[in-house]
Length: 244
Image (cartoon, rainbow, N blue to C red; front, side):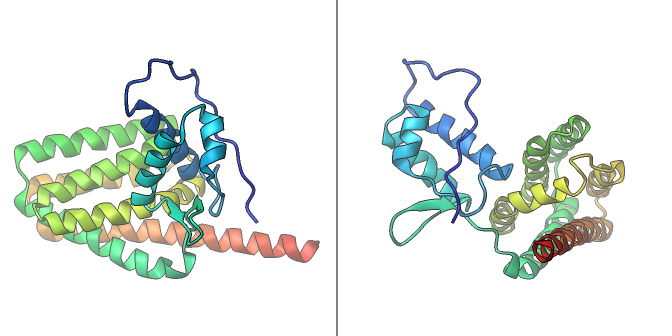
């Protein structure tokens, strides 16, 4: 059974004159960071009373934060009304990877066909933010900038259905992406950062075929790396179990 884990304390205590909604935002951001960084493991209980004491807030902002996290698929409310950190469904990963790869391809291709100058400006801004996060070895920054980058590409394609589906997939895969960066000890090889640049260049050139190809290749290397990491982790756990 998962143990209740303490959330990292904030650098500053919240002010008594907190603006309405600020408390829920604080709880949301700190819980979300702990979940994405895997400090709160899948299955960890999130008891409203305990969190209320921990954050020194009423249950209302705690509940609001949990609702937001539930919308992102990061927490799950069980039939008994208890809330836990959502599990990572490794069994369904092949289906997830299939859908993710398709969205990488279709959104990148569509952006190459439909992008406008303002789209390219936004895409390049997020490309730069991602590169900076990689240089800092800031895994959570990489996760957010990566999402912003690919969502900007999807929005440049102009298909709201693709954009919404891709957003859901990227949100659902945040912890998977955290494992991906962990497989590099958060020191991502430069070649993978350069893949973003190549995708942007294809979009800017209006080359839909090349954009599709680069999107597929980008997704494929992520899938391979995550599968390899999971296989190594599984083998290590089996070895450890056998040694006991």
